[in-house]
Length: 178
Image (cartoon, rainbow, N blue to C red; front, side):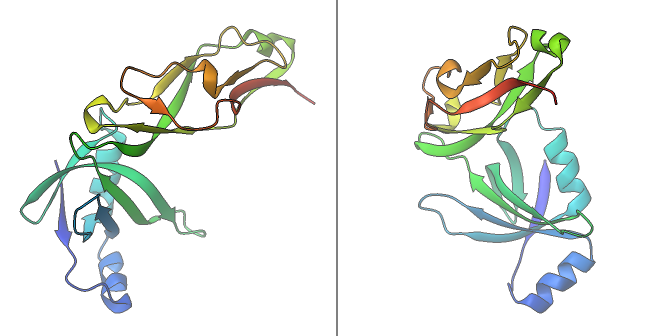
């Protein structure tokens, strides 16, 4: 389990000192909960996120153990180093909006006809309770030819999950290479 510290001060001077010591600044929030200003060891956070098996994962901050989902992160434009991360608490029984990744599987048949697979949406917005939260949407792209696409309405959501993106938006497609 990933362990972090609660930041006592959110002043710029203390934030810079934490970053110098190898910490990643994080905000943890949830509906009806008080925001928590936290910091995690940067390397430990990256390892935990890469090796997690579900979209929601547990973190321990102070005495609290929370199940959280990564909402957004910011990188340094020069070094590409993680600078800040926003985490949302996945509260059981509470209907909440999440961003779920789209994972294409298979090799499109349009690649043989000089096509290129384009993924225009990497994540889909969904509304569900934390218990029903899918890890990802696995989409089979092996049937796609050149100029074919998969729209949001073509992706089947599991029971209890509602996709709230517009149904006419293209998620994956094969286009002719130039």
